[in-house]
Amino acid sequence: MKEHYYEKLLHIKTGGYQKEYDALSHNHPYEPTEYEVLELLLEQYEFKQDDCMVDFGAGKGRLCFFIHYFKKIRVKGVEMDDTFYQQAVKNKKKYMKKTKKGQETIQFHHELAEVYEIADSDNRFYFFNPFSVQIFMKIIQNILRSTEESPREVELILYYASEDYIYFLENNTPFQLKQELFVSRLYDNNPYERFSIYHLS
Image (cartoon, rainbow, N blue to C red):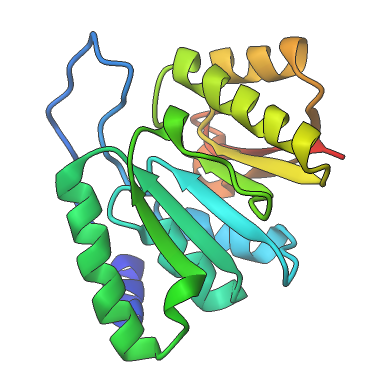
């Protein structure tokens, strides 16, 4: 019900799942974050007007459109799969036509997440368990290198984070756990149903 409501409101199509899965691949199959879960993030996480969020493994762009629409911050989606990237671009055209918002405040990049060049303005990074910890580690190193060159406060927003992600962050980086948001309806049966937010100042 919520998917139909939000897809109509945003004038986008981001549903569906990628069933094919190569067990040897470092990249996990496409699965959009449920709108119910995004509502929790909207309600309990504070965005600032000058934030710029990067969604790694953006798929068809659901998170980007949702956050852009309700929080009016800049968003970027990084997606390696050409089919999903093209769908995100198509969604953007429809979204922009409906909302009349600035083109430059929402961008999609067709490239591997680990080669995406972190911009000085990028300060919020979203991960819905999109790839192996090996790729995650490379991206975190890219983020840390960027903050050395351009010091700023950054935060990682992890949904359904693997134990490998958490272990790496807490034992090998200066990031510190700031906040956890639990998806109440689902968390009791699945401890992965939560946002883990890590802060670097």
